[in-house]
Image (cartoon, rainbow, N blue to C red; front, top):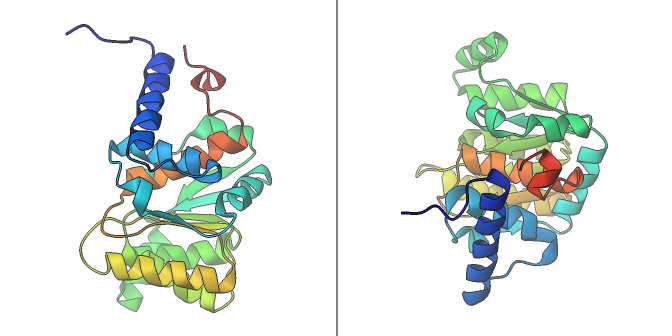
Length: 223
């Protein structure tokens, strides 16, 4: 086998070209405002189902980009998602990202309440960063907690709801999306069972790259 390309920038550009062509052939070209997110997730997963699965509240991407320009904090539900978020892009925008899952206070609160760390972590996120971008790729209980917090008045800049799995996953996504629509909270949700920390990070990166004008890999210093 002879590799088509050796340089990262060329590999990424060719990959996105293939994704664009295949989406067109399947009649699933996303609207311009969703294009960067949908294609970045497909690039991360090689799964074209996300062209159908990803649901957006009106102007979700626009509002997320605006929040990132204002230096919004991103809070993830796993350290894996946190590790996957582009730090140079976030720094360029003056933003930060964090995860509370390994926080001793969160562990203690979860034990005392008899709940999951994801629940305690999102409650802490609501207190510490009420206007954050909340990116959930693993825990349905985190989504249900965010839903309850929104009903109680929390207004995050964006909720990314893409947990993966079989228990409470589909229902938590549907409930969260409905609550976000009801209260005008921007949301991007992968309906169904599919998702994961890598998908949560991919969505964050697509938004960061859009906000920081780094969609082309050369803008990230790649050759």
